[in-house]
Length: 506
Image 1 (tube, one colour):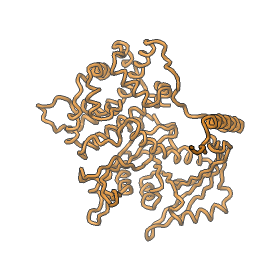
Image 2 (cartoon, helix red, strand yellow; image 1 turned 45 degrees about the vertical axis):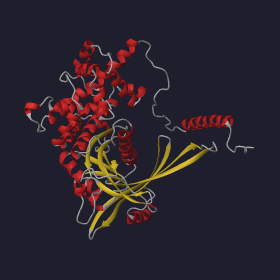
Image 3 (tube, helix red, strand yellow; image 1 turned 90 degrees about the vertical axis):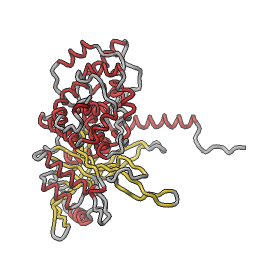
Image 4 (cartoon, helix red, strand yellow; image 1 turned 90 degrees about the horizontal axis):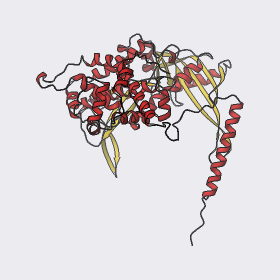
């Protein structure tokens, strides 16, 4: 005879789910009565298609394709101008595809989220796809094989591809497209490192190495690590900016010390300053970076910063903060942000000494949050708390706390979300595309340009509603499917593309 189950049966689980929904409704009504912002993020509709006829669907498909292309078209001359400057090492007598066409093909590979070179070869070279693509890009009469692009990337300076991306972003700066998203008049740039992929064998001398557990013993793993810098705005828009690859040869081979994220930050920050000499920047950094040399470099470059301060970091700073905040009751500020109540405490002008005789003046802020949720087990409304601390590059006061902390520092997480999207949502960040180091970097830079085009489309006025209804991957799939079928009307598309266009971001 089987033992009676201790788990709730199906009916009990259904009743528990119903009670949870009721408790959540009550909590929502209570929060609204208190004047808290309870607006949820828009989610993809769980319903049938809105199109009643095939003509409605056709119009929607043509609108999606042309509006996305107009964003590409508006920025293509900037990309083309930079890419055309790349020296072409190929034999002129044997060139079948121009260098700029190959670069455009590489960008489109990621705009349309092709999973690999083989998928691109299979899907993007179909006659209907090329015919539709030729309507959008008249210079494209035939697409190359993926290996043609790969062989080109082996020989060229792929850093010029990233320079094309920087030229594109710089043009958006000049057109003042991001002015409404600035933090204290500065562009927030989040910097974070992530692993690209790893293998159990050495495929290039530039790979980093680490020891890993392998069965009962110990093995070696060779991996690629990249430090990324992206514009991280408080509306969620994250624009790729610059990548710094960590490499074995950048380390100290004599003392067997490998390249690391801090060394890579120094190289990346130098390049960033060289490229945008006068750009007002606020760097958003995680808990790895609160140290004297990093903060000194930011101040030498005239950069503002907000750096996560962990509990075990900079103990002398924490001791100073704990002592001073007790005798500075005026340095407290309460406010509500969305559905959370926040209590800020801060202390300005803390001296941090490091090295033999060096020091930095820091400003520390701690935010304690409280909010209510429905407990999944007891179905009761419980109080939740969290605590965040940052080092600020500028003095703090009640007037700038919300902007610097809630709109600036908190959105360092944007780059974490961006890396997740690039890894798991169609951009194949962890796919190496080639075991040649130069080619691998080239595909990475092309991916970042393709990602930028899609982000601009997502936050453009004309396409925002479509992205809300279909989701990001749904919209890209919608466009890709349109190009694979006989949906486009030549006259309609040409008329639409000939109209004046100005990118308007939400």
